[in-house]
Image 1 (cartoon, rainbow, N blue to C red):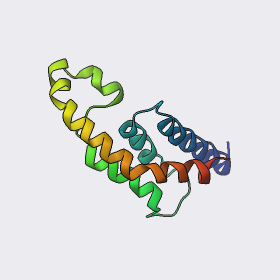
Image 2: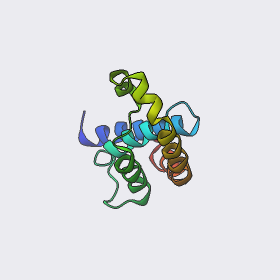
Image 3: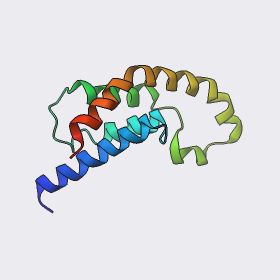
Image 4: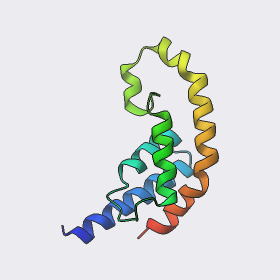
Length: 109
């Protein structure tokens, strides 16, 4: 696979991830973390406002357990964090909706 093919595959992965978040098939925080991790792989300029949205969400929620890591946490700890997770998800959805749509539009091949 050459570099162009790799970038195209990562762009499709980012667009698919954003689409899953928009369709409520993937948690907004987990999706933002995935999108943030792809930022250097999708060939967009540094400081891209859509990508920076996901970097911000990732940074602000990095202490919260989402996805597979939840399996390593006790149920009582997860229960105690649920109000904080709910607030974080609401905040993330509010700031990410446009960026998610933009990623689907811009990075779909």
